[in-house]
Length: 206
Image (cartoon, rainbow, N blue to C red; front, side, top):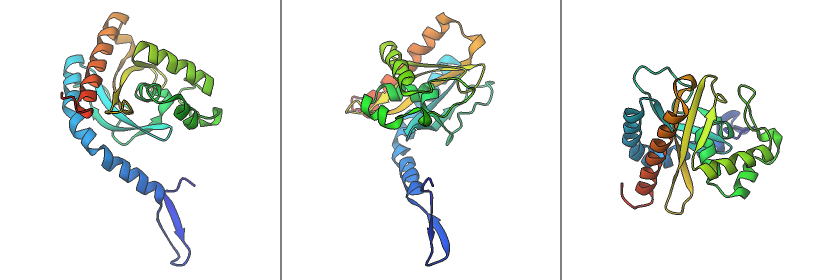
């Protein structure tokens, strides 16, 4: 149903479908992104002492392509290769907020497009639209307990030379450990890392 496998009746066997090809091609396209982003993400972890990750949009999900775990921090759900609903994650929200509104509408046309975790997060096109207005106004995305209870994330989008979002950079931290003043510092460091990667991918240097 998802296009990852097709049946070949003449040969009486199954083969990989176009969905598998598209996903594999997507990973191949992300190889330069991973190479250029790994060191800045490691530096972000060093500066914040919280785990950082890089995600890309795939349909209406995000796929995590880098995770840099801070020493002593707990294991997170954002392992490399994990897919999560884009509208629930900080990385996904940062990417969606930088997309044209008509593209967001195409990805989330009705309530059935909204997968949920923990019973929280936007569940309709209008709720997502209001959320993305806030993300655009603030210049960063925030997620609080909507992926994993007790943990929050802040994220910013990485843009290419045409200002199209190609990834989201985020850090995840235990909610109870971080007050509003410290969160403001974390936001600025995430935005700084995203801006640095944007300069790299737009050809404007590091």
